[in-house]
Image (cartoon, rainbow, N blue to C red):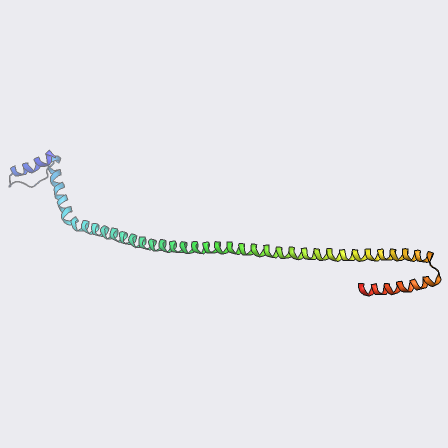
Length: 184
């Protein structure tokens, strides 16, 4: 840095008249050349640099604007997805409630149907038992009646004469006919 300032200070001591030629002193000529080149670059490159920076600025602004639009679109999609999720959750809850109530209804119907079937089977069983009891009672009556009749006939046959025997038989036949009418 000292060389650069020294070269500018030494310019003031140079004489204005002189010959034109090449200066071979690298330390004295290099800062002058660099300052001239930088000055030309700054003067002419300023527009190019401004254009590059403006283009970069426009691209950054467009990227930010696109990002904001994408963010807005993503937020809209997120809100739509949340809305659909709430709707689906409501439908799932409704299906769940309907499913549970349908299960309870089917369970109640099955219990009622089974209860009715058991009641009918109990009634059929009771009717069958009653029918079998009546049939058994009827068979026992017939046997008792037959045995009593045979015993009475046997006793009568051994004890009675012919006339008394015929009269008893006709009386018993009459009673038997009456009993038969009663049982029918």
